[in-house]
Image 1 (cartoon, rainbow, N blue to C red):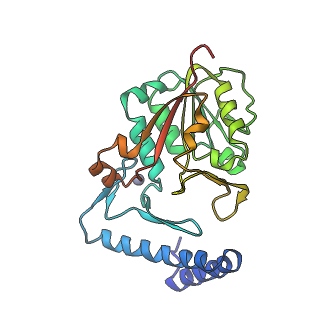
Image 2 (image 1 turned 180 degrees about the vertical axis):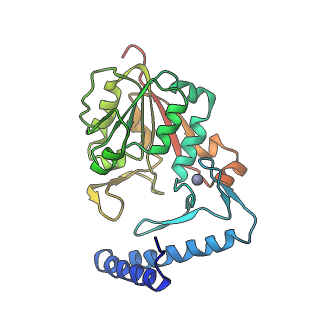
Amino acid sequence: MNRPSSAVLLFRVARIAASRARRFGLRSAWNCVRTPFINACWRWMDRFCRPRVECPCCGWRGTAFRWLDIGQWVLPQIECPRCGRHDRHRLMRLVVDEPAVAALFRDARVLHCAPEPEMREWMDRRGARFVVSSDLDPFIYILAPPPKAAADLVSLPFKDGSFDLVVHVHVLEHILDDGAALREIRRVLRPGGVSLMMVPFAPIPATVEFGAPNPELYGHVRDYSANDFPERLKDFEVTAFRADQFLEQALRERYQIRADETVFLCRKPLGS
Ligand SMILES: [Zn+2]
């Protein structure tokens, strides 16, 4: 397939920017224009500069991870240009490589919510007995390998204690009643079972509820704050792998993972 010419690309960006300006304002339009330009500069620098960052998911090395346009903000150093994984995947990969965490997958019955293909590969490699993929999005559901269920996280079609492990990365911020989802995850875990979870944190002092999906923020229904999110996990025994405590500064810079990015390992207490 022929690559579109620069003129065609510019026309497409201008059309999207005009639409963003109408719907979300000039700041959003400006972010739409500047992000591809910044990323083109990084691509160019990769050809001439010494690598400074590395993706632990695919081994790519380069000058910088690509910036990500998320509407009103542009997040720097997020996306790997080779595998497309983000900083959350990089941290999850490093945590799952920890021997004690990797052992959780051995012969485990796993529920993988909003499944991401690369994570599924890690689970299979670590010896999971079976992995059930679950999502309501028809596109993701169709692509997910079997066994799979088109299930809502607040109402899972599984018996109590069906799973040893439930994995969900950046899912709760899409669910209006995240408390109900956490109760449901706890229900389908066996006593002593574990949920590995991540949510995105905004640099704000307290969580802000939107009340409805925000179309400019991937349909998120809230901005979580790292300060108060752990209170929502009070029914679990929690071990937090926070990037700035889990990784030395030099490694965190090499993998470009934000200080407050955290993998929560939430264990359902025995006898509950
Ligand atoms: Zn990568």
